[in-house]
Every structure is written in structure tokens, then in C-alpha cells.
Image 1 (spheres, one colour):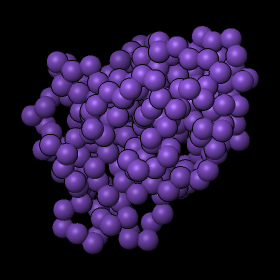
Image 2 (cartoon, rainbow, N blue to C red):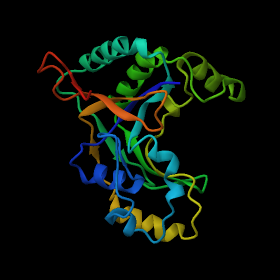
Image 3 (cartoon, rainbow, N blue to C red):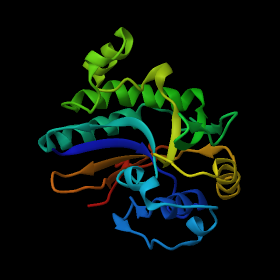
Length: 237
């Protein structure tokens, strides 16, 4: 089934995006696979392509809404709703992500991420997107019957438990990581991805059609300039 997602994706020319995409082996902005042998992977103490097989399908991103099944006929309405959301923020609004206390945790021992904390504006953006865009989804991979009452309520109405205080801002790097050099891996990743504040200037709408295995960029909505132009979105296709 077709799916869409609302993600934060760093600029194409940023070192963060280039290294993240090299690690995954996929450029979600262009929809192109990248060479398996590259400088980012070579800088790691160990590497197995299976560690990035799952995150590769989504591309280097931070989930800001969620990836949901949907009816492609609703895409014009989704795009219009995205315009409304970004248009509600003032010109001087600053969206920022700050590295978490542990910037590269190994969640559950095998999920390696770049972990960030959102500023109030970023949290408001996430909340607006979840409230306005997620209802266009027809379902997700989360079963509400297996969740606690709060998470079940979220899944029932917004198709995701990862919202509001349950939103953990992160870029996925590897899962499942099954290597034997976790400390050396963490140090290498800290050198490749030094913890730095990240200003968010756009939000991205991605799609994955029925016959596709990987997400690709559909439209990018500029945040900083949303009141300087009539059309807030840049079409990719």
C-alpha cells in the first residue's frame, strides 16, 4: 500500500546530510542509491550493510509527523494542509534542535541514532503536523491493542504513539546494530557527526508508492521564508 511521511531532512549540501546518506547508502532527496564504498563507512571500525538495510528505506531523516498508509487521491488535500501549517508560523519563528545529553545513544543496545531535543517552536510544529496531517492516514504498523491506554488513544486517532511527550527527535543510523565494537563505533560516529545545534528551515513531505521499497522526497516546504512567497512548497516531481 502507498505511504506518505512528514520528515525533517537536512539541506542537501550539509555535511550532516551527506554523511548520513552515505552511511545509509541512499539519497532520499534524489531517490538514488549511493556507492557502497564511501568515506563515511570507511571511517567506522566495523560495518555490515544489514545494519542500515531498514533505515535506508526511509532515507536520512528525522520523523516529525509519521509514516502512514494513505489514499493517493488525498495528496492534494495533504499538500494544502501542509501549506496551512507552515503558514501559521510567524516570520521570526526559529526552529532548532539541540543535541541531547547523550547525542548518540544505542537504544535497546542495537538502535543507533543521533538524538536531539526540540525547542518550543519545533515541538509546536510537530504537534500541528500530527494533528492536521496524520488524520489523512488510513493506518500504520502500530497495533493499538498492544499499547497502554494513552498510546492506544494516540494510535486510534493519529496512527502513532510517538507524539507530544512521546516524540523522541532522532536521525536513525543503524538498526539492528549487531557489531562487537560499540564503544569504538560510538566514538567514530561522534567524530563523523559532532553534536551541534541544528536549525530547521524546511519540512519535507515524502511518498512511497505501492511498487516502491524506498521513500522519496515529494515536496519541501520552506519555513523561514513561508511569508515571503505565495507558494511555500518546492515541488520535486
